[in-house]
Amino acid sequence: MITCVIIDDEFHGRTALKEKINIFCPEVTVLAEAENGKAGLDIIKKHNPDIVFLDVEMPVMNGFEMLNKLTGLQSKIVFTTAYDQYAIKAIKHAAFDYLLKPIDIEDLRSVIKKAEEMGKNEMPKQSSPAGKSFTKIAVPALEGLVFIPIHDIVYLEAESNYTIFYLLDKAKIVSSKTLKEYEEALAGQNFFRCHHSYMINLDFVSKYIRADGDQIVMTNGSHVDLSRRKKNEFLEITGYNPSK
Image (cartoon, rainbow, N blue to C red; front, side, top):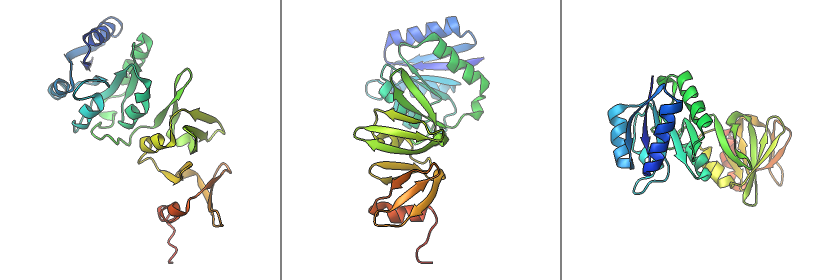
């Protein structure tokens, strides 16, 4: 049996989700509900549920602020919201999953199935807003969200207010988010902002070319500019000591 709590400031939102769980996910027991972040903290600490369905937009204390106040949390956090711009931030907070309102029954069942397949203790603790345990990043696309494995990203390029992802399989994915947003989302994931227009995955660095305009060559053959002010930091990160 899987246990859960629902935290949402809208009564009909809590009711609708509870009904869907009761009807379509009988293996799940709803232990408690809360209409705000403060009450949500209390029921999580009291019940220690397997899953926390957490609304993002709530007055006084939103879902992210509430999550920041929890320490040693083992529950799987599933963010629920009507606003898909929260997807990246949700992933950054090491959310187990993300459901867009109105919640689709099949999406809900998929989340529950995934929770069943993963024991509670296998999940990363959700105590830090800079959770480093996620393995994919959500990228907005026309049909919804594309989840890209982080280890498949060779580098990212800023194009005005858009960001282009260059992947291992040579594919390119264009996102409507800025490179700055992805720099924050990928903090601690071995990425380096080498230039105002580029962020690279250090795992795929092949060569550094010292010239009038310094460049980094990636394993896919791409040449990426290295800004003058980032040069020393890059050399230090990659283990090169120019004094030796």
